[in-house]
Image 1: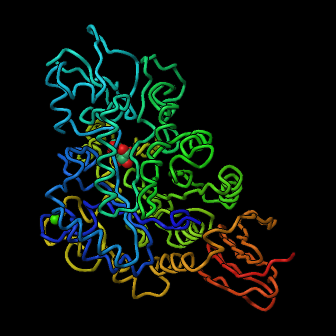
Image 2 (image 1 turned 180 degrees about the vertical axis):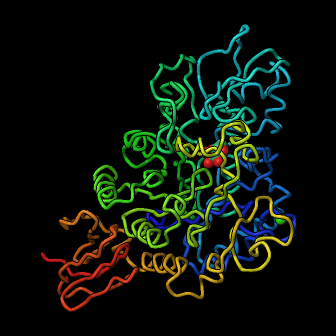
Image 3 (image 1 turned 30 degrees about the horizontal axis):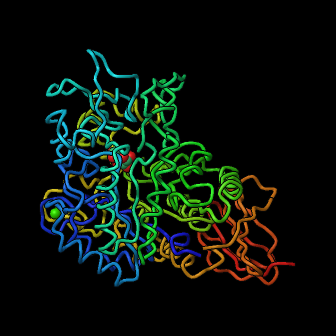
Length: 539
Ligand code: GLC
Ligand code: CA
């Protein structure tokens, strides 16, 4: 089975991981100094949010040079060293690739906007307006996607923020340039790319108006109908599905067998279109269902069954609890570490690739920075919306709050920086930091470590099919992982009451948490506990 189907991914947001030079911003040297800690946790693949040269208006998702390192993070030598040191520790590297758009300070765009005759004009999407916007397309952030530029009296299109002009993939030279960028990094040995808003790559060739919709707010797993519009002509175009295959084919020739994981959204049908009917498109896509989990056994049972049906082998589901755009899941659990253990156990024991956002392993909490004071461009756009209102509506406006610095130690600034951190550290209790949690056997960090290790050492967990089991107890989730004659049975108690189940003869406890135990001839499962058992399967 291909390595990327079996891996686990850990996302690092470079701004917030570790500062090495006291300027308050995380950097590559800082990350280098923490690699042993990441390896100790058991991580197999590290995905880095962008550290390319960028004005930083969207904190790196606005790139002005795809083959240079931004000086705030370090140098190309640092980056080469980082790749080497990660590989030395038997881990892999995934870079974030923002193909959909560049920064408006990218030399391509500066040239493109300078005149209609410029050879780079057609690198971006330009349209005449005759005094009004070329069509009704709304961007993913809820504003018109069209931006007027007076130099040539035309509009350019941006499906995210206005300083992120969309590239025009109908121009073969754009494709060529972007494949060149991929080659640059693949030759350096990177093992894959996370493709930013890949659902947005192509736009309708004839610029038809989008139909209207009754829905206003998008959700993490559905942008296709939002802001009273069906995004028929500016998201999820068939050409984008086709392009997924082209990129896959292009990268496949590299010996490290790199992979692509796409940030796309929509129905399972849409996700499958990106993966390709013959599993020949993007290798993986983010599946965001867990972002808005409902902490009940039934929700997780349904999700397992759905993924087993819709994304059966050769497809591999992914399980995401958070990222740099979403509320941290620990806050959605009211800070309850017991529940965090159940949820993360589910994420690691299901069939698929678990994706962990830095800090989840210590239950790092969010900030409460108002939209008004936000550095995030989305917060700036909505600065007069009070935080309680956006929270009430369940929309995430100030993404600063999920990007606070990592908590390493109970020293100044939690060991993140000797200077003034770019975002506040927030409150740090003794048990919040990595170093404290490493010392405590029943900490969340050690639970994550056990999960990473358990999965790493088990072909059944990496490859085995999933069979859910009925327990007749609404709070108790039970499922089996099956590979040949080998099985692993998982019990997770989502309830406030203790549950007990008759023991399975001949089974062996592989892992337990939350006080779960074998007592006489029953498995005892206290509230929010879990048990993982090796079982021999009946024929
Ligand atoms: C993706 C990124 C987000 C960024 C946006 C524009 O959604 O995850 O952080 O702002 O794309 O690149
Ligand atoms: Ca720094």
